Image 1: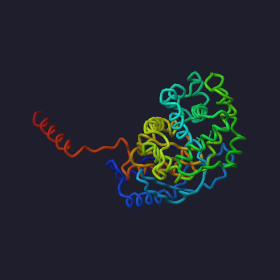
Image 2: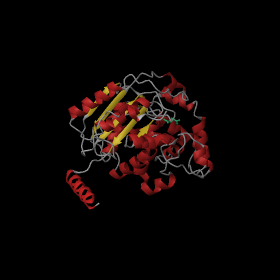
Image 3: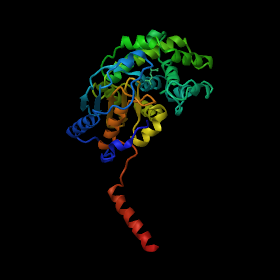
Image 4: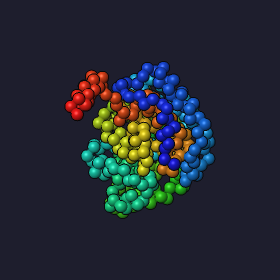
Length: 350
Ligand code: GLN
């Protein structure tokens, strides 16, 4: 099922004014969006990671964090779940912060694969060069860039870095980690394939283990909104005030997230919603509005590409009602006048 945009066609497409409406209005719109999709049941929960199949599919949280620090939590916004693929965007940001734009660009590409997130074919078709860091092959290659003399140190760096984005110490969900570590043959195959092409330094099994741990970090929709808002705020966490990465790193990361954050559905998403966003198979989704804040959803039922359906709906709704779509504009009043004059004079000429 491709996202059906008619679910929010009655919501006026507000155009960005450069800032969010006041706190009260944002809060009202978040509550409205949460209530509107409360009964939505389409999609299926992920079952390829055994423990994820057992999650309550009714859970539904929505959160907005403003760059000014304003907080809006609705429904199950404080329910904990594993971050999964959403970790990829923050580890990528940490990698660019550490190694710089050029070096990371050489190791992992920035174009969409057009294929599933765990595709082996995508890697084979590109001479073993991972096309982007938002799919598993590219994410494993990105995790390998984390500084540290050992896998344990690299894991610590990932955990600390993602905790700084969240503004609180994040911990591993041991049950999710064990379940995924016992069923991640495909990711290990990707690690070894990268290695066979000479594109992974270090032991593939150890790197995939760090990657598996990063995916099992426990977060809430509220945390994801804080993490996303840090990327919206030039790299400064708007809740703690701590600088986590540079503004250049945020720009690079959000560009890559826009192209590939929802895998092969990224074009559909950008066309309908117009924001960089990243999804994960446990049902999380975070969209970032540069200079304004971030919107995060959590709802476990997914589309075929592995993106939370209800989170897409609620965030799509808020993109319209909060005026977040990066591509939406209206003529500036002065220019609107000129346009009218010139079309009228053309009319007179003909
Ligand atoms: N840990 C998951 C995996 O590697 C993450 C995938 C996802 O969230 N799409 O398969």
